[in-house]
Image (cartoon, rainbow, N blue to C red; front, side, top):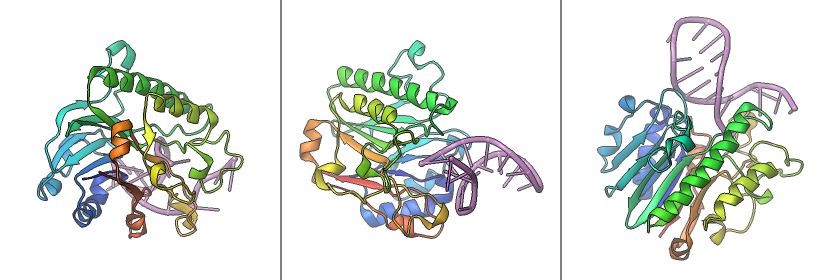
Length: 262
DNA sequence: ATGGCGAATGCAATTCGA
């Protein structure tokens, strides 16, 4: 069984590429981020035509997450609000960044973590608060349900120096700062482990490359798209890798998909 | 550090991403 995560940077622009990739790679479940479309305009037929059940949670122009699965998912939860009380969630479900569902006693949580712009900015404060709410969300899910957890998506955080092409001097850089890394580590302390690192210890493996300055051809990227697993799943996983081939196509997403195999 | 690229909105120029 293959479960993938991919920030597609607009599903309407990328629908052909995503469809072909799903077929070519025999993907059972895919978690998408930055679909950038309201639910009514989502090209669902495109994917139901090739056998996928589609679960979408989008908004106009920005953000948006979705899960496609060859088997139907159970117990879909949209946003934080179906898990956490309104006074905790506040207005943090206005941006559509969280969707979750269950397959084979595994709860999949698909996330699009805010980018944060730059340290000290309003968006940075939003990112840190959002991560606090995420920690409460995952804590609640872990205690409320018996399922194993797979938490994946675009985290907009490179956890370690080996996850960045040029880590030197990035202690206060967005996506690499000590504060962001500590926030993510706190969340992972709930019992989640980066499955990519079970199979690959070296650096130079990235999942995002800026569109500008031809940095992809020089492999100057960041590994910010992750799949985290609870212990039983971590032991069961037989592979995890990044497929950089879609990033080589004409008009690509700036992110490449990450795949975990069980 | 900047924002040169790309997408959405909406039809030109701006906002946002990372």
